[in-house]
Length: 66
Image (cartoon, rainbow, N blue to C red; front, side, top):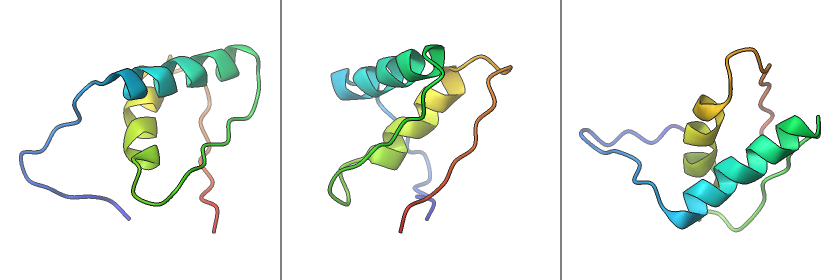
């Protein structure tokens, strides 16, 4: 589900930075990340900006768990 809120922007926070850093380390180690937590805690919102920070040559495949 995509959140649509006209005029809304993601604000950089310490947690958002931590997700981006963890993702970068995982990619550098050629690992597979798994982000988990309770619903509504911002996992997807944190991952989207973190993925955009990766170099374009890094292949990204997303799988949504059910």
